Image 1 (cartoon, rainbow, N blue to C red):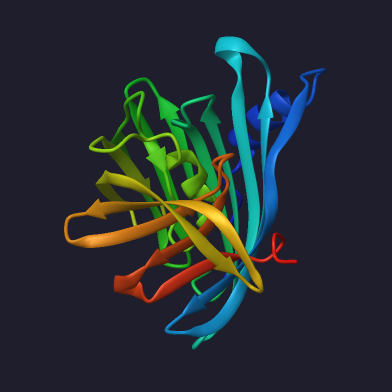
Image 2: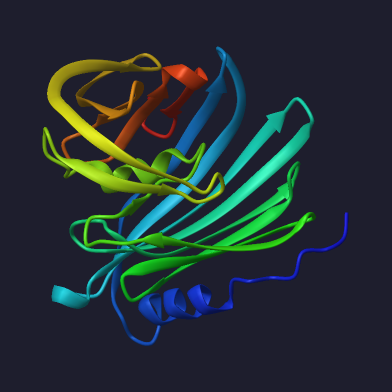
Length: 231
């Protein structure tokens, strides 16, 4: 497979500007998920979400590494997301995939749309997606991106872009249900929300701080569960 030339310079620059140059940032969440498909643990996700700046210029910067053992071999995803605070609407994104299905995707916000550049061994593809003040980015098999859905109220529909699959969906938030969730040996208080994409459910458990504890997509037999909070 020929090397994939990097497309990520502009977003790296904007993130570096947000987190550097004297801008104060604080960690709002960081940790580790186990990743299972079909009841079998296939990998691990490590992530950090920081908030930089104050007032209308405040932004979230979310980065992570997802390592998976797939049937065809190992794969690693390294997503980097920039979003407005406090709502969580996206304003830029990149992901680099190594191993199986090596590729690179960059989304830049240009006026009322996201311009996406997708590069893989098959070549380069550019697309445009409509953007609004509510648009979220939630990558396929990346659990920590659901943090940016924590403040979506019941009955609200939000546009979501899934960059690697080039899919746009409208997720409808269901009612918030308080329940106890078992994480390892611990029982923790959680808030369960079901987000609907047509007839596909995405079930997310949040804690009181809006941190993602567990993500389940029954149609994909996918489960991501926090490990760093297990005593």
